[in-house]
Amino acid sequence: MADTETPRTPQAAVVYNPIKVDEQKLRASVASAASAAGWAETLWFATTEADAGQQATREALDHAVSTVLAAGGDGTVRAVAEALRGSGVSLAIVPAGTGNLLARNMQLPLGSLDESVAIAFSGVDRPIDLGVATVTPERGKSAEHVFLVMAGLGLDAQMIANTRPELKKQVGWLAYVDGVARSIPKAKPFRIRYSLSGHTDRPAHVSAILVANCGLLPGNIQFLPDARVDDGILDIAVLQPKGVLGWLTIWRRVTWENGVLRRSAVGRRMIQQTDSMNERVMTTLRAADIRIVVEHTQEFELDGDEFGRVRSVVLRADPGALIVRVPVGSEGTTQDEAAAVTTA
Image (tube, rainbow, N blue to C red; front, side, top):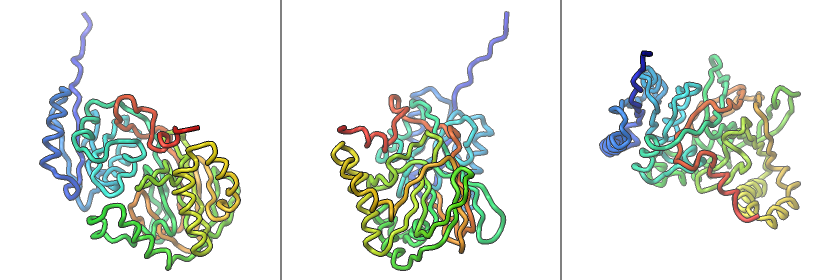
């Protein structure tokens, strides 16, 4: 008779930021969901000042866990995803931060700890792309990092740097509005050269350039509404406003046009009539990868994490490199896709 192996009981690990989460409530919720699903006892790993979550996740993988719950803000989720890249082990998100960007884009629950935890044990797997950034800093050697939602060079990164941590604790993502208000008056356009998918370099004079894996921002702002988290493509916004009117034009585009008009056929026709003006201040591009070299070093950020001043960055999509746990029946829908499925 052939030998048969007893199936291994699935086991989860939790990588959590002790500053962001209520550990007692989190442990109780995880214990209840794991027991109900018949999973083995969960492993626990806290992030530290020295480890945002990458090392903790690698330790969890050494135990051959079935899924890793990332409990914290966008920085924790990004760190866990970086370690899970290409492993085949799924990521479950328990959002506890200011932006919770990937959770928003994938329509995952934001306000219920128990719902988020339950998805880890009873949900299904959905492969998505990761953004990969090779960053050459002002000083030192190049290094590779991942991002889940968006990378920013220039004003966007300056805004992140100028957002006050104490204000984020008080008002959440609205603190970024203050960061924008304090960044724009000091912002100066800068020169870059960029190339898409290895093609010829193009020069540009910009205030910021953003590269997105998916395009929804807090406040339900559809910044790049055509971005999809699983299409193997990065969506790029080159911002070239001139004065206050230029910034107002960008704001109108991402709030009124992207958020309202594009949901109807009449609205889309109205957008087409103003495309030429929009393109002068915000050019959108799509490519599997982009290389950017700046004339003078600029601030750079990934998913809201500051990476300091850089000389160049190469960003690319890594298709299907991450598996995310989602509710049953939502395997193919993201927030931006859902918003687009409205009246024709």
